[in-house]
Structures are given as structure tokens and as C-alpha cells.
Image (cartoon, rainbow, N blue to C red; front, side, top):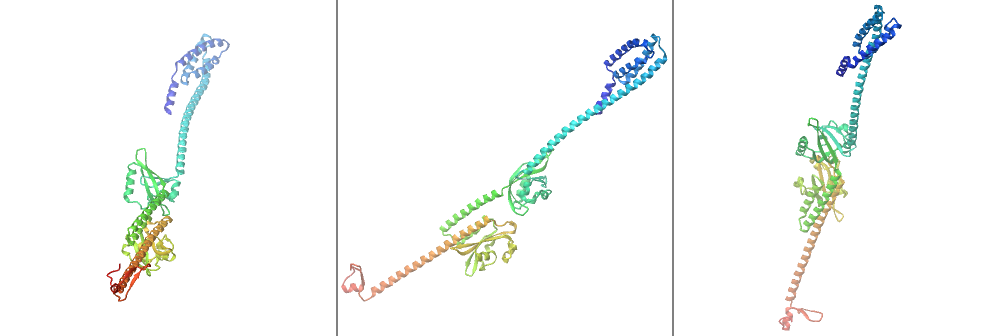
Length: 491
């Protein structure tokens, strides 16, 4: 700001040609006025003062001083021509000029100061205008930022911003609704906070390699809420770069698809159940063994319900026998438990109702023999044949799953118990039919044997024995009768 002012001051001290013309014009005017007024006064200063003021305003102060000396000398010379020249008059002119010159210089300095203040004021106005423009731009940017922030906070999907290391720096309210963690709880934590251990290390390694290379990652994850429950989410992670094109942050958008996955899973389970029903029906028609069919039921039930173990117990005398089980209990087949059994098995057998235990290790009636297995959730349901309990179907999950059996999963368990009931009922009917067939065959054999013995008795008898129809014709005659009548055979 100082450079323009210095240039302006330098230009102000340089005389303009127009100023020289004004000096010449003022001098000529002064000579004319002097000769017109001089005869009526003995003090030439009366005419000098106005002219000095004029010159002081026209010229700059440094040149006005020379102009004043010139005017005083000119006045003294002119007074000689007018026979009034004396040094006292010239001195009075000099004193008067000093007074006027002081006023002119002061006025000029004041004008220079005013000009300087005006220049500074204009400069300040320009600076203020620039600041106002910058402030207006900043305000617009702040408003835009507030609008964007409000949009992100109002978004229905959960949004998370992390740094390059995966540390959470910002979350929106939808994140709290999805995970149960508030923004204060999540910020500063790693995204591992939501890890469910349902994905292997290869899955996460591929995710990080993708986003660190600058690409967008999209996929589905199973994460864990603050309360420990699992949920499914559809997630996209976008890298954010700075001015140096370096990745500094990641923006993650999470969409809750738990309900959709539950519907898909429900349809899948329903189709699998219908497939199991169809297959078992075919196996029944093909006369598969009962134990083979029951084994297929426990394995398919464990698969669809996502259970670690599955069992079927059937009654035999005063005991309940482990008739079918998944691989973990294959060595325990044919193990016996006294009726009504203990744990979930005993509770189901006694109550004839479905029993679901969420925390088996804390259940007061748990079976001590199964505590070492680390069971987390256990469910059992009765198998009925003609309203009579004919067995128990059980499923169980271990501690690592940390997941209870839902009502939908319990319903699937009950349907598989119905399949087991169908298998057992069919086997019972088949056994009864086989017994009936065998009994009928024994009866037929006895009749044949009885008829054979009767024929032997009749034919060897010495009496006349014969049989006729209602019309009196012989249908049978024993050998003695033929011999007495001399007949060879009955005609």
C-alpha cells in the first residue's frame, strides 16, 4: 500500500505545464491590478496577499515559496516606477507574505493529509469490500457444509467416516439406530468394534486391499450390535483423497438388510423342508431303513436351523435311546437314559411340549453330562404318533455361536419332528402289516395242513364216506366206497 502513495507524492511535487501558465497569467494580472490600485494606497501588500494565496493554491508549497519571493521583488521594482518604492514597504510585503504563505502551506499540508486520509480510507474500503466478499464466500461454504451435514445426519442409511487406519471419526444418527453405539461411544474406536467373527481373515484382507488401492468396495457383512445380536448389512466403502491425491479417509454407507435376509432365509428353509419331505417320502416308498431316514432328518434339521448338534431319542422299555445324531454324537448312538430323562429331553418328555432354553449353562435343570460341551442354546420338541409321544427331537448350539433359537427356527424344528413322526408311523404300520401278513400266512398254512390231515384220515377209513351237492350228485367218494361198489373212480 505504501508504493502507490510514494508515486502519488512524487507526481504531486512535479510541476505540471498547466501550473506554469497559471503563474504567468497571475503575474500579468498582478501587474495590471497593481497599477490600478497603487495610486490609492501606499501599501502594496494589499495586492500581494490575494495573489500569494492564489499562487499557493495553484502551485505546490515548495514552488509557492519561490513565487512569493518573485512577487515581492516585482512589487518593489514596480513601486520604483510609481515613485513609491521603499524598503519598508517591501519588508511589510515580506511579513504579510510570510503570514499568507504560512496559511497556504498549512492549508496545503492539511489538504495533503486529507488526501492521504482519503487514500487510506479508500484502501480500507477496498480491503473491507474484499473481506466482506471473502466472509460472504465463507458463509456460503459454511451454509453448504451445514446443509451437507444435515443431509448426512438425516440419511436413512448408517454413514461412518474413518481415517486411513479405520478409526471412526464421525457417525450419523442412523448408525446409532443400526448398531446401538452412540457417536460418542464410536468415535475414536476401530471398526473392529462391530466385528462378528463370521468372516475369515481372507475376507477382510480382500476388503482392505481394495479400498487402499483407491477402489470402491461393495458387499454384504454380518456384524454385531452393542447388545451382542447379529445383523446383516449391505455396505459400500469409498476412499477420500486430499489435494496431494493421498487417501486420508474412508466413507462407509451401511444399509440394514437383516429383514430381507430373514425373508430369503425363510424361503430357503421352506424350500429345503419341502425338498426333505419329498425325499423322505420317496425313501419311504423305496422301503429305506428307519434309522437311515431318522439320520437324514437330524442332519437336515441341523443344517436348516444352523445348529451345531441334533438328536432323536426313541423309547425302548424304561429307557430313552439315542437313535440318530449328527457327527459330534455319532459315537453315542444307542446310549440309554432312564425315563423321563434329564435336561431338555426329560422336560419335553414330561410336558409333551416344545422347550427352548436360551442360556443352557445357566439353566437350573441342565444335564451335567452336557455341561462340558459348552452348549449355548438348546431346543427340543416331542414326536407324536396318534397323539401319543413316540420320541424327542433336539437341536443345540455351542457358546461360540452366541445366537438363540428364533420362533421361526423353532417352527422348523417342529415340522421336522412331524417328518420323524411320519417315518416312525409308517414304520409302525409296515411292521403291523408284516405281522398281519405273516399271521395270515401261518393261518393259511394251518388250513392246508389241516385239510391234508383230514383227507388222509377219510381216505384211510374203512367206512363208506362220500359228499354230494344239493342236487344229489357225488362230489367226493372215499376209496372204500368205490371198492364196495366195484367202481374204479367217481364219474
